[in-house]
Amino acid sequence: MFTGSGSSCEPWREQIEEAIAARRNAMSIWQQLVDQHGYSGSYQSVRRFVRQLTGETAAEACAVIETAPGEEAQVDYGTGPMVLDPQSGKYRRTRLFVMTLGFSRKCVRLLSFHSGARIWCELHEQAFRRLGGLTKVLILDNLGEGVLKPDIWDPSINPLYRDMLAHYGAVAMPCRVGDPDRKGKVESGVGHAKKTPLKGQRFESLEAAQAYLDQWEQRWADTRIHGTTKRQVAAMYAEEKPALQPLPVEPFRYYQYGERTVHLDGCVEVEAAYYSAPPGWVGRKVNVQFDGRHVRLLNPKTGQLLREHLRQERGRHRIQPEDKPKHAAPGTTYLLARANKAGPNTGKLCAILHERDGQVALRRIQGILAMTRRYGPARVDLACTMAIEMGVCEYRFVRRYLERHAEPPVGLKQVGSMIRQLTLYRDLIEERTRTQS
Image (cartoon, rainbow, N blue to C red; front, side, top):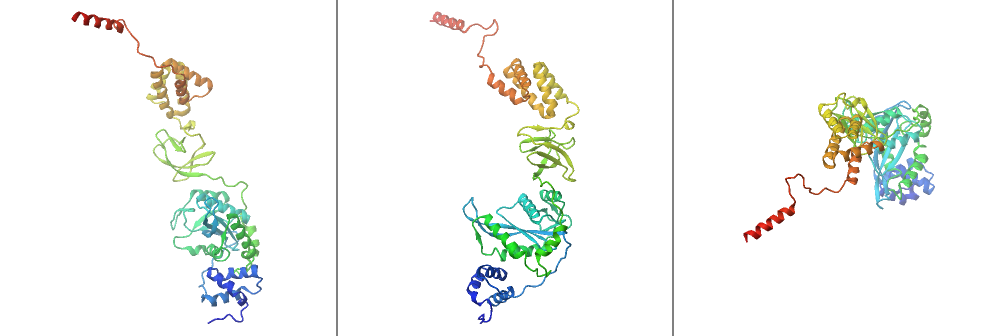
């Protein structure tokens, strides 16, 4: 049985055995001995000591992919440490994002509680800023945040991820399905962090975990001599950094995206507001991109921009002049004629609605005409006059004005000379009753 005699690690046998029980690797054990116990021996001594205690065998060699400075970076997710979630008050497993430069092996490691397409993109941006630039190509596997549909020859990149990279002047290159070795450098970076600084660790906040990881990155990861290149990572990064592409002046503006069908009125609905598509797209699907300021309609096959609109409030329409019908349909002409007959300002308001909103306004015009039967043409024309004078040319204004200023319902009235007073019928019935008795 191995006794460890003659090894410089023997005085710390107990600490090393506890670390092995916590499933920490030889590198993390060596770093902990140096930082916390002033150990002056080499990493190889600790590695031999750990191997003799565990019976570990050497790993098999793998192929090396060489890239030029600034040419390629690899990105991936891994599992991070347990961190206290301030919202739930419980410890949660975090996600570890890693970006590794292909030439220098310089890594940026970031922790997050959540994942998703936007978070994936934002983590890229944070890594770009930390590196002071970015590479031309990003290698990734086929996770959903980056790839919508894996394909050997033509994978579908997540639109938000694709546009974010295009803003920074880079492209995504997913690995072939089942071929993770293509991004072995970042796989190694993920495994290194999981096994070395983060193994068995718990943190009270995400900020504390990230600070610990950053300190380890600077103290150990950047100063190590890489096993393949036989050079210090920091020195190689200093050589690669001038070859990185510069960051743009403005950050990427994030948007939401989806697919919509063009309705019969020529518009698509985005968050309860309506935006016109070009003529000829009724019944067809378009891709939409929208943020707090704009809504963009795109050709789903070519990605060509069809229309760009300013965001509208819920229930409002945004119709460009060229998307309005060139000629009014017979039904439209008939409705506008009825509105003019109902009252001058009723006709004027309906004409304004049709000119502004096109076919969408037809149902509103019908609603105004329906109110003439309930409230009378004069009162509706007065409400339309108020709407025009106040600059609120909306069907809802007319309806609410009439609801608030309507007269009480009119009771039954005697109309015509043939209808007698009810008292006469009463007196006649009483007289006939007395005569018969």
